[in-house]
Length: 44
Image 1 (tube, rainbow, N blue to C red):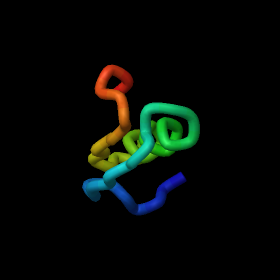
Image 2 (cartoon, rainbow, N blue to C red):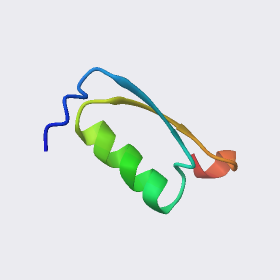
Image 3 (tube, rainbow, N blue to C red):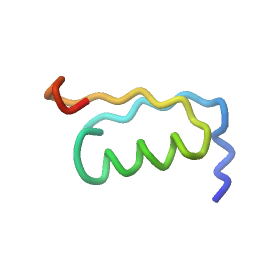
């Protein structure tokens, strides 16, 4: 699916588990530069 996000930057909060992680992965596959954020550094 082309969302037109190639080259864009996205900050995903809560991205170390479940839906946040899935969103971060899919956006990266679309060519988005993804910044992830979570409460535990060991999971990022």
